[in-house]
Length: 417
Image 1 (cartoon, rainbow, N blue to C red):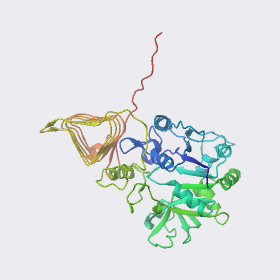
Image 2: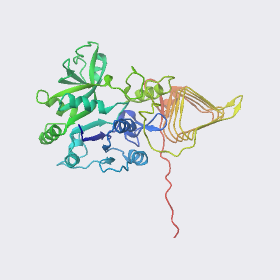
Image 3: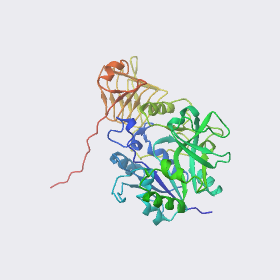
Image 4: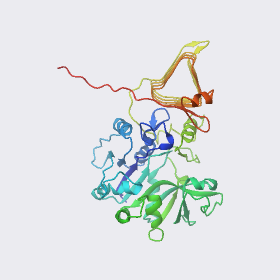
């Protein structure tokens, strides 16, 4: 059957635990993998799944995200139902508030649903690193004749206190929600794991509209899907969980693991970044049948120059983005963004370096995250003396040094007068 699908991407999160990377940008706009942004994963999943009608709901510190969407995700399709449109907070609530929760974000844009009149509405977050064939989840939703389908992933039961846990019957029907409870019920067929909600939902439109209007009238509600709307539907609607581990990505080898990471902390973000530079990474960015899309940058190729003892430009087990020049320095087990410079005698190891950073001659950087436009002086050392680093920079509990970047100047057009 021909199914009309409207998608909402919730991209307004503050990402406070990723500070200082979120000092000047929303979490979905944080760079990842050298040339991407976190939001690129959910948008690529939707577009690769054939879903082209997408509203991106934005709110906090949205300028960086807006600029990225403009540079990489403006869709000029031939059909009027092909679009990716950023939507700022509309303040359509009676109190004219910012979005108060995930459900309120959709409620304040309920007119977009009513105008589009879709069969189903896909509501996905923009906070995670993963690949997913969303078409398969929608097919499962239709097959089950569900009112709501919630994407879920098995995690160790010891992690139950960190997630919203779904309680299901063996056939996947949802019979309970347990928000960050260490004693949450385990999976029916695996007592060592619980079902964690991924915060991604597919709703049948009639049910979604009815529940959003009802939630608006409830003064006791926090206006959140996971805390309010979904638990209230127990026994009133057909709700099913979709096991993310059953999802198959076209072009991936049969039996490939399904990669999903919650990069809500600096340490988790760093570890996910390090995953990319493995010889055979679990997250495959090189599958041409399921491309990770992003902005169209007009970068020159990366360049490695000089071949002299003590002055050899090299990178090993690393990802290097366009326009980066390794000029007589050594890069090992790292992820470098666009336009980075690593000068003679410099040594970079196990680092994540954002766009336009400069690592001076003989400088040494280890286990660090450098935000955009950071300049490391000649002969400086980062990550070798954490007590000294703590005096100037943010250092995580695991010893990752995070150096705050700064905004680059903006060139504006001039006119002759």
